[in-house]
Length: 544
Figure (cartoon, rainbow, N blue to C red):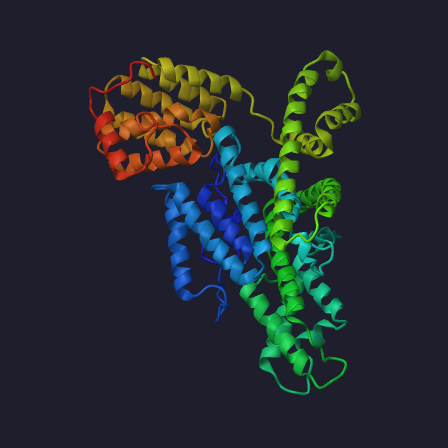
């Protein structure tokens, strides 16, 4: 995918691979969503220099390669993103809030691919990931960190976010958040779009003409600019307004207000990218569903924030002469504790709810009454989330025979003694049209057979195939496979492949045999020691 291209996460998923999006795709999508990457029309990018661009390209490539220390490469990119955000937003609290969301999103993603397998292609799996996990994380993160980092204390003169950050869909016409943002700016200065970007039409000004044309394309949704382009247009337009001799177009805007305008544009640009990707990949119906989901969950979180704000006011009122740092600390500690307590309570009640769901009385309830039971135990936010996910899951039911063949393959790989057993299992998968979904398991069966035959070359061939396919689709079934692949790489003198497998294991938190307890399991000393130990031909496990 072209660096800085408007093409994002979902448009590169036109293949039929059974897989979650890769970590490289997720991180690139985050950068694309931010609008911080330069585009072809950016002649003078004020945020990313040519050298910065080159370094960022290299960082993204190294992460996508997944060759070693994935967490370390992620950390490098997160530091880079923070530096760019500080340039773009120039408000530390807001930057901290955004970075916390990015961290939480990446942790949620890692948890999901570590636990959940998938039988859907990458595009449908991404749609499921968004609906079942990422939307709720987005909403909770915003409301929690808005108070936690005391962004509310900045008293930004910005309209209620939910009133303009979602697209409006009317008769298949969509008004995107970026259009709403510019209208907020024009309205706040009581000026038209034309007068804002080109206030003195008596004077020929090519740049003003171009700025007006660009703004018209942006508002109509025909083009999505970078943040640098947006800021450049805004700054030049405000400069023209300030020097305008006409009373109806003369405006002087404070530095604080300019920063608020830029924050509005930054949020709107990111939101527009995200929602445009949703619409182009999954259609208007899913876009409307996503907007409804965010709107409903935002209302629920807003009620919780009002309660926490009331508690914060009471706590602060009990002190005198609090410094800014002390107020910030009160916010951070109390908000964090409130949400942790909420999460703990919800988890406890969810265990009780699970027992209730399994009773015959519950199974006989109508859908409406069942929903009320969910709400009574885990609250409206998580009840809505769970019910929506269940409803969404019914759209793409688990294929017939999937669970049965999954269990059969997992059992077979542990006890395989004949190559014909692997061949028969492979045929069963093809006959059930599950060869794409469970091909990693079929390859694993072959690999274990050849391992038992001490055929290192063929074993490694199938272990590599199984590992490559299973990474983003097998969920919690990866522990043994990763460890067996690591051993197989060593036995075939493939140090680089082994290194990549160890990197993947460490990223997901999968324990690597014989590296447990090492301070730095990915150091050259650790890896070479492992390579030498498990690479010995007489080093073999009797039970796989």
